[in-house]
Image (tube, rainbow, N blue to C red; front, side, top):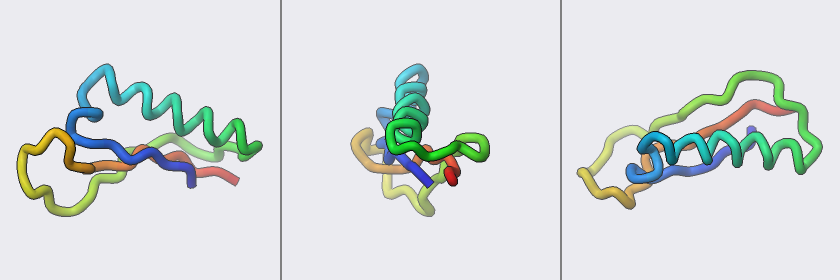
Length: 63
C-alpha cells in the first residue's frame, strides 16, 4: 500500500487533494496497479490542536 502521512494543517480542504494525487502518482511511477479506492487512515488519539501534528495517512491499495 502506498501512503502519504498528513498533519492537521495538510488535512484542510483543498490541501488534502494533493495527498490523494501524490499517492496515486507514486503508485503509477513504481509500476504498481491500484486495486481499490484511496482511504484515510487516522491515528488513534490526538494530543491537541497542533497543526503540525501527524494525524492521518492517505493510502491506496496496490498489487
